[in-house]
Image (cartoon, one colour):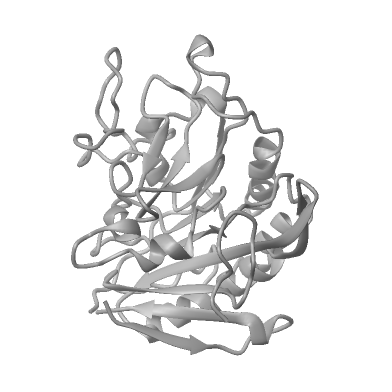
Length: 314
């Protein structure tokens, strides 16, 4: 797969922000209604509580609220929905076209409906134009895929791009407040032709535009100031730059060690020009069309060195 490396001039951290591209083609998409859906999971006490198993978190529901409150203030936004803990299950992030194969096959329960319902309002994620989920996340399968952890264990606890997700309905922008959720390694291993990695969850002729997330670990506390500032500043333009600048942290302590928090963004489109137009001039209200999703650009801070992942390229 051919990759083209370029540096782009920005503000504040301008010399550090970079992006990379993977390639091919075009088709315009219509704009959907203005709907927001937020999902936060904090309780992972295991099957005895009907929950998925992991370490409990304490900031994810607040983090979703930090994003949602700005959408609530915009009178043009039609719906703002929030769901937490066991109200977040695998069906919400599983497409009906998926559901078989793999060690964590979609909807692997025995007592519930095993059909992906991501398109159904209000719980299904793919019914909303802008989606945020705050939860545990990680890479998998030798960093060729990534997963997000759900709250309800009656369906899949780990939803992945290859086995569960397929953004083919209404979602334009997915914000993932989770570790490794927009990993450079997974993006580097993604292939449009074989539909692997992040491409496995993208409809090439759909309207999905951007994944905002992290390379390495995300913050382990709510962003009471930076998250609302990011949303406010991104109403009509500069969504990618704002995400990276607002959510970046130069010195984040974990287990006594200080390293960086590395927000990243992946924008899918048909040409570099359309991808750049979305990144620089697109916002939550003005979600610029990017054409067919036949290539992608990876936006990041060059050299950013996070916890639990290798440093990003300079």
